[in-house]
Amino acid sequence: MKYRTLLRHVREGTKNIFRNGWMTFASIAAVTTTLILVAVFLALVLNLDQMARNIEQDVQISTMIDLTADEEQIVQLGEEIEQIDGVKEVQFSSNDNELSKLIESMGDEGQAWTMFEQDNPLNHVYIVEAIEPENTEAVANQIEELENVEKVHYGKEVVEQLFQFNNYARAIGLALIIALVFTAIFLISNTIKITIIARSTEIGIQKLVGATNSFIRWPFFVEGALLGILGSIVPIAVILGGYYYVYHNFVDVITFRFVELLPFDPFAWQLSGMVLLIGALIGVWGSVMSVRKFLKV
Amino acid sequence: MITMENVSKTYSNGVTALNDISIHIERGEFVYLVGQSGAGKSSFIRLIYREVKPTKGKIIINDMDLSKLKERQVPYLRREIGVVFQDFKLLQKLTVYENVAFALEVTETSPKMIKNRVMDVLKLVGIEHKAQMIPSELSGGEQQRVAIARAIVNNPKVVIADEPTGNLDPDTSWEIMKVLEEINSKGTTIIMATHSKHIVNTIKRRVIALEDGVIVRDQQRGDYGYEV
Image 1 (cartoon, rainbow over the protein chains, first blue to last red):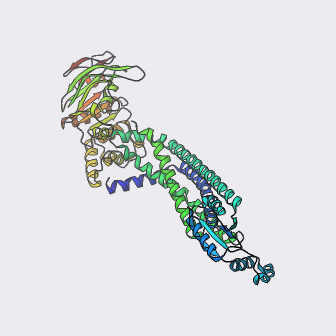
Image 2 (image 1 turned 180 degrees about the vertical axis):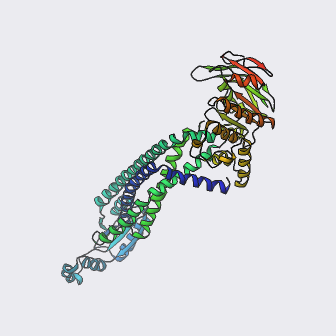
Image 3 (image 1 turned 90 degrees about the vertical axis):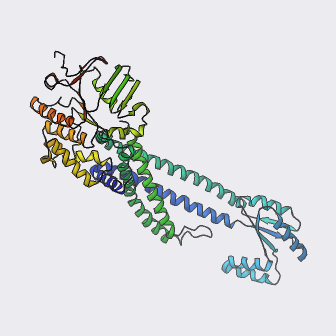
């Protein structure tokens, strides 16, 4: 296709946007509504995903070593743990280290524990991390079997529930997004179809004088893309404004150890880009779909 | 130029519009297609510009075998065939100039070429002074001139006219016939379906008469032959 022809298609597509006034407005409104919902779901799903990943990353197995074990046995245990399949990292933490962590985590009340500094009742600990967080349980079970292990700790229930919740959330979010996108495509293709019926004579004449299908389709392609892009302006504004507000007002309130929102920059921008792309795709698909049956002349 | 061999056309609703038609039309001929409504004239025309495909038989136009023509090649066939209809089929929102230029735009002709060519054909059909008007501002005869201009702007080898004077008064019809004759005199083949006994009997040319989908008469310098 010649550059000049491409310009012609862009011109025609843009002209149609204005020519179809209310229909254009209806299509854009449909895209806008859909994209706002899609953006909210995407933001939720992606943040949940990120949180889950943080938690997953945090899943550690504390292996308490028998108080009676001597230094040699402790080293041997460390080597044995390292040889278990699926173990990523093994870190030794002495009982003194554990005590100071405990004191720190308890704040002011922790001061009471300082009296144990001379006679530490805590165990030495191996902190173990699995390569795949899902394998934590299996690894923990194997460690428990080893000699000189007193007890194994990991947030068993919490971890399992979180994984499950996260999988559900992801599936539901995705299903909703897909359903929304298809609804929007359907709405657009219907609105454009109405405008095409008015233009079917025009298409018929174009075919009559020897226009190829792609020649006829191009302006619709442009029109669809423009509808999608125009429809994503408001959603992008909502994303940028809304996420900025949420991020800066709630980020302090909801920061537990692992609950952390994705940072505004670059996340909000990436989300905007995604929304723009989805909008353009919805528009193009909707319009190209609706022009298809009018090409058979 | 145009050859049909044992062509039949039966529509999906079971109506047989053409039945075993064989015909040969030479380059530069002027052919009238006559017959009552429903005799198969329109199907004959639609077969030529490949709006419909024959159920049986072979159609060759400009050395192109239509049965071997792929769907995506159809536009290129149509660029070699100009079509004129009774209801003009002009785009109401475009000016006269744009309506004609449109046929060249789809072939990606350069704007300069388009301008020259469009003005040439508008002059040929005698409507160049109304180039910037829109169709609704023109009379029926003028609109048909625009349609003819659009049909010939691509320099087609064949012009097909489906009752081009059907909506026009007798005086205007004669003017349109003059335009068609002039185009024919420059070597373009013209096939014209018509109900006008007066025209056929006055401007004597080859007459192909259809009746119930069959050619009942094919006569050089023939006459209309039906009492209406």
